Image (cartoon, rainbow, N blue to C red; front, top):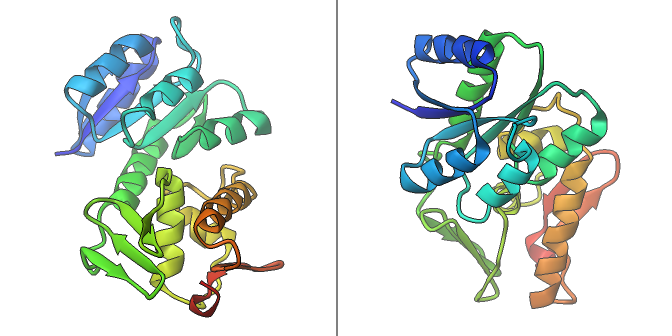
Length: 228
């Protein structure tokens, strides 16, 4: 049974989320402070965290930054703000989805299910796979490039894993978002570009003349083995 940690200081909102999530078969824990939630996550990790942005001790954004220092647990933000900058900031620091208040608890439960489904290991993936240039270790969540280990964020790993899985296929930004487990309606499509830019920089540190990731203007990105 997946365990969901709810970090929300408004009891009424937390109660509706607990009811909706438990109705879908999830176990839940509710905390009202970010500091306490970070400590609990280190001791007994949850499978997903629902994190309010406007908490009384530290902001959800700051809490997520600190969380990412020790955990890749999926995060769904709750916020009363609907500005584009909030969506971008929230997702760039490592969130997986973003829901604006007021919201339907059933919608949140559906998004939680979708995130966990996307994050689940793909049964068809071998533990270790790769090509002449790349070696993917799915169990250790590592990718080697020309025998050198790449230091990747969770989103960078998923993007590169997806591209390497189907060489020469052009993936749209929406398809890459799906691979990240991020809903395509959260205004994040263009931020795929920033992750690709970061990935390319890390690949060039290993092989400066190579161009393994190809851009297809107006379409998306692909992996070219011949250029790796």
